[in-house]
Structures are given as C-alpha cells and as structure tokens.
Image (cartoon, rainbow, N blue to C red):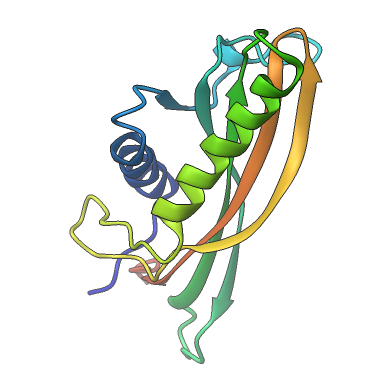
Length: 156
C-alpha cells in the first residue's frame, strides 16, 4: 500500500538527507519551531544553519471513486543562513555556496519515509531572498516533494 505522505515523516526524511549532504561542512539542519523566530518574525539562530519549513500541501484526486487515493505535492522551503563579516562578499558567497551544495544534493533525490516508501524525485522550484540584517544573509530554497498517498477512510 502506498504511503499517506505524513508531513512529519517527509520533514524528518528531508532533514536527514540535508544533514547527510552537509555532513562535511558540519552545518546544523533542523525544523522550524517557535524557538527560532522572535515576536517580530525574525530568525534568532546562529548561522550557518538550514531550517526546514513546511509551506503547504496540494493533493489532487486520482480518479478514485472513494476519494482515498491522491497525488500529493508537499511544498517545503529550506531557509539557508550564513554569517561571515570578514569581507563584503564572503557572507553572500557563503550563502550562495550553501544553496549550491543543497541544490546539487537534492535535485532528483528520493526521500525514504518512515514506512519504507519512497517519494518521487525532489523538484527544485526556486530560490528567494528572505532576510538580510545583522543576523546574516538568508535565502530559501523551494522544493516540491511528491508521492501517491492512500488513506483508509472512515468506517461506515
């Protein structure tokens, strides 16, 4: 039976893959929580770091009369931050290098979920600036993670 594409399982697999990709650089990877954002919405962590953020889900029915089988697209952002004040260019270049390393490792990769199922290959869908201030330079790498999901449904 296909997976249910549980958000927590997809996020955990994505964090693990990012940790493996960045193992040599020893850059921390974690999910976003209230502990990494202040009251004004600013990030309050020490870069370099990658924060995994779930942005939403887009399921579409697969012509299943019972509406229990879906093609699910989950949207994630990887918030990539660096801080290096040794020169004007080093901080920005560090953020670009972090993005490049992640794109290279994630493009086309499949996540293995807790139930043993694999997702379709990861789709890169963009990069956007997020925050530039005394806490560093931040960009988000946008990803689409897709798989077939089946749900048992309510029992009548």
